[in-house]
Image 1: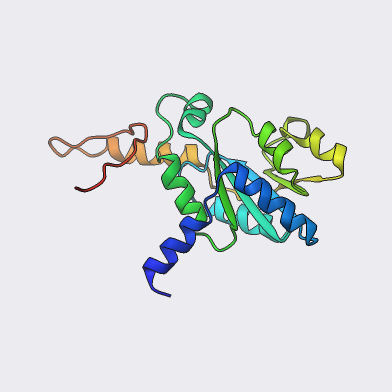
Image 2: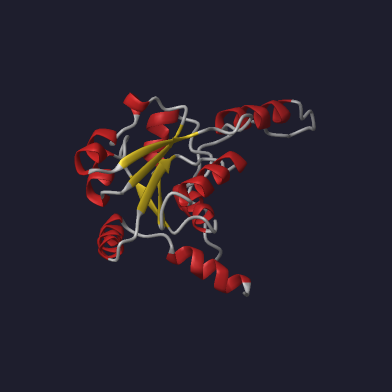
Length: 189
């Protein structure tokens, strides 16, 4: 498949919440299982990929909700996100295991979960059962929450620290180290 076709196909996976609500209703009417996971996915790494592959095996349709830039900044601090929501969504959509991606602009996915009503909600095992936002909602309508084991050695925060440490070792004149919050890239004229 030509790269332009792949790029177009991955962009078509990025949908609004309203479009995903309609899609989820239709899929559920056909007996398909909807799986939802969410997170910042600020620097996509192998641990994320493994979590998403595991989540996909739990159902027919995997929806990934990623936090907006403002939401990530509120959760992680002023130096984040490293990558814009647009870029994070495109990277997630390019993964074979991911069927749909949406960006949500809230500190938690509670309203999104209530609107989509996934059959399965997947979170990393670093979240305690009582900490998982939306778990009570799923229990009320018969959905289930799955805590996926984390892959040792993979962490966005640790990756950022490692990159920053490498940057601080750069002694070239004029070399810059550290991260700046993601900004929307400028389009070429």
